[in-house]
Length: 138
Image (cartoon, rainbow, N blue to C red; front, side):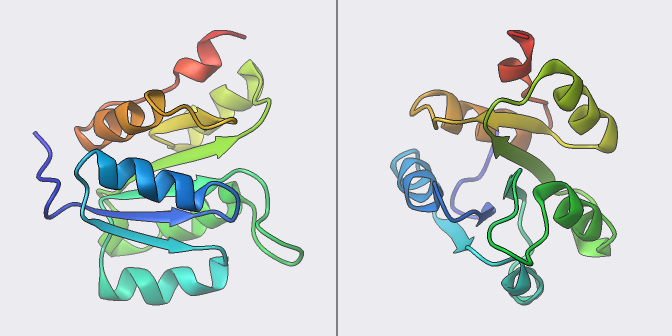
C-alpha cells in the first residue's frame, strides 16, 4: 500500500501538469513537484527523490529533451534506481508502446488525461506494477 503522505511525485510537463497535480491531490498525494523544463529536473530530484516521475513524450519546448531522452538520463541517476516512470502522449501506437515497455517505462498515459484512469495508473506503478492499458487498443 502506498503511503501517500510520504510519496514524492515529479511531473515534467507543460500541458497537463496542473490537471495532474489537482487529480493527485484529490486522491490524497501530498508531495507533488512540477516543472515545464527538463533543465530544472536535476535540482528538484536532488532535494526530493521522487517515487514516480511523469514525463511528456514530446519535447516540452524547442531545444528540450524528449521524454525518452530525459528518461534515459534519469535512469542513470543512482537515487532513481527504484523510481517508477510514466510517459504520456497522444497517438502512441502498439509499436511505440512496445518500445516504451522495452526501455523500462512503468506505464503509458494517453491524451486526453482521464480523471479516473490517471490516478489508477499512478497507484498501480507506485505499487510496483505496470500500466500499458492505452496500448492494448492498438
